[in-house]
Every structure is written in structure tokens, then in C-alpha cells.
Image (cartoon, rainbow, N blue to C red):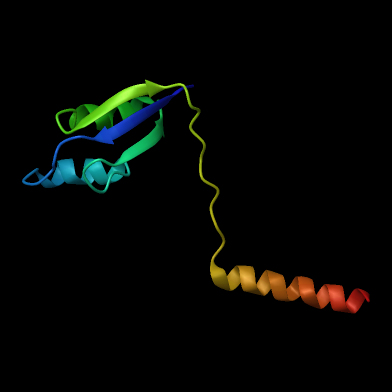
Length: 90
């Protein structure tokens, strides 16, 4: 499966709320933003809804899903446990 490069090329000032929500759903925040998105029917439908505001072109780059970060509190807890085990092993 390929990727789509979506760019916000027109201002969305004065656009209806549903179109603003669609733009946010595509991950675009301000004029000129670009996103690399998976080429799926859902994404193509979102792009079609706001086609007068965005440009979309196929991209040879592969879409990579971002790895979710753990909350800071959990990372600190895990680091403390690792230090504790390291000290107990010495």
C-alpha cells in the first residue's frame, strides 16, 4: 500500500465546521502544512471532502506509523525499577 502527500494549499477561514473537523482529522493545522498519510479509502474520502482546500499526490515514500510514547510517570517508574534491580544485582 502506498502513501498520499496531502498539503493544505488554501485558507480554511470561513469554512463550515465539518470541513474544519476534516482538516484537523487529516492532521493539518495551518496553511502550507504537509502530511504523509496512508493511501486508504478513508483518507481519500477525507481529502475528497476538502479537495478545494488541499492538494493530494501519491508519494513513493512509505507511510510509517508513529510509535506511541509512554507517559512520563510510567517511564520514570520503569527507570527507577531498572536502577533498583541493577543495584540489587551488584
